[in-house]
Image (tube, rainbow, N blue to C red):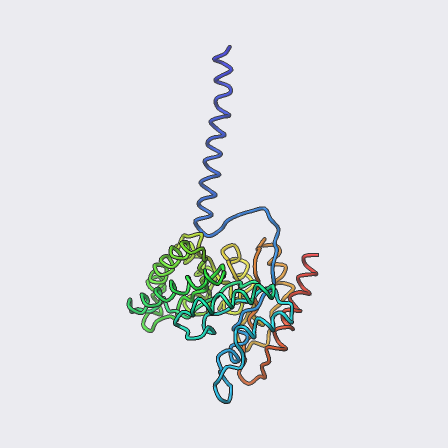
Length: 320
């Protein structure tokens, strides 16, 4: 009788081990591809990307080409608008592309903290699609230097571009993507050492579709790399489909005034975007980025609050 009972009980236990193993393999496989599942509902924190104030921060289109705003001024303005978080793009730090002093980094970090504003990320210019290995190597080096800056700043994500499609490689996407992937892998490994996630932005260059973004981030195969979802740079018929497809791999956003690119008269369907967000279970920052459109007046002091208000209204309606 004892032997019979043992035989009867043995198989459920073995089945449990097999099931557990299957679950663990599935989990690690998903994690390796940039997806970490949980059961928490969607939760978003509206934020601002500093690029919305690009002209003021750089002096572009100013009569004397001198900046009329600093990052400290931007933080102060965000406080007047009760903006919870801001992406402080690297271009606006003194001396860019050289890294700023620790004194500057820590004073900016202290000011943000005093104002109750999170620093949601930062980013640099780079070209990982260049056919020249020396160019790519130099940009990886710069990325690593700014990963250290991001770590000191307390920015959880640093945005990196892919690069424009190089001349003569228009029909060689996979070859160019291979260069990019190796660069991202090196940056993600370095980011892991400093607690900074690498955000790969679809910028309408080498990355124009959800399939391309997912292919790259899966190949990078690191939990320290994900997508910066630029809602205005999917070059497809229905960008909302690609937006939804990429969200599981997304670590930060740039929400634009139109999903059909700069200058489009078709404004973003904010309620539809918010429904997609809620369905996706995304939790994290949702920075906006308003842009200059040629031939149209541009005032970020008006446009930024207007877009944030539109998003907040849709958020309240969808997440009520």
